Structure formats: C-alpha cells, structure tokens
Length: 162
Image 1: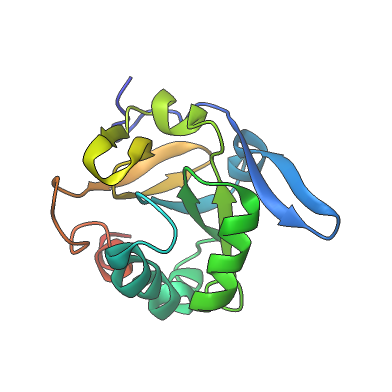
Image 2: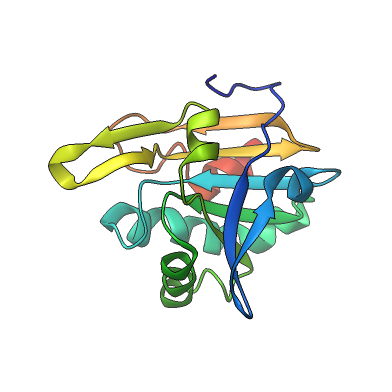
C-alpha cells in the first residue's frame, strides 16, 4: 500500500530513546485523537537530511504547534541510539521533535515509502516525505521526487499546507 490523502495510517512499532534505553512505541497510540506531522527521510547524519530537512522542522515547530499540531515525529530506518544522538546534534530534541527509529522498516514498508540504493549502502530506507495526520488519517501528504532536495517535504511547505 502506498499512503494517500484520506488513508488511515497503519499501526507499527517504532523506537524512541527513553531513560533506560530504547522503548517501543505504538504509532497508532501516538496518532489516536491527535494532530501529528510525520516526516520520513533516508538516514540520520546524511547531508540533505541533516542540513535541510530536520532544520526545516526545527524552524517551523512552534508555528506548527500554533496551528494545532500536537507532535512532530522524524522517522528514519535507523536505531534509537543513532536517532537520539542525531536529535541532540541537530537540536531537534531540544526543539521538541520526536526522533523515532523505524528499526525494521515495518512502517516505511507498510506505507509504501521504502527504497534501496545499494551503491551508497541504503537498503529498505525511507523516501523523503512529510504528512499531516488527524486521528491517524492522512490529511496532507508531500512526497519528494527521487534525487530531489526537501522543498516539497520541508517544514515550511507543511506549515503552508495545514
């Protein structure tokens, strides 16, 4: 299934770093009755993800909250340790962005956003996208073109669309 506007997002277990290490979190429970932005990207510490995509949501986090967004989740096929360290180094954690690890790419695959680029060591990674869901139903979906930057899926584009 490839996600689309109007679709209900599937549940999946992702990991976030807690006080005692990685903690499994049900996406369905995070989405239920809430307004949530999820932005997916190919990988922590990669160039465009680090210099453009994450910073765009740091810049817009407070304005998204003012529009009723309860949570902004950065999702990548990585582990919770890497996502926490990356969130610390970029300032995403301090900005209130949830850095979530889709460790086995189960959510990424369930929504049809996976891709592989063996030449650079990417297997079952996430395409670059951003979505806005209300009570788990996709209201806005911005999928970046392959090889593109993050104009379509950046924080400013999402802010303008909500």
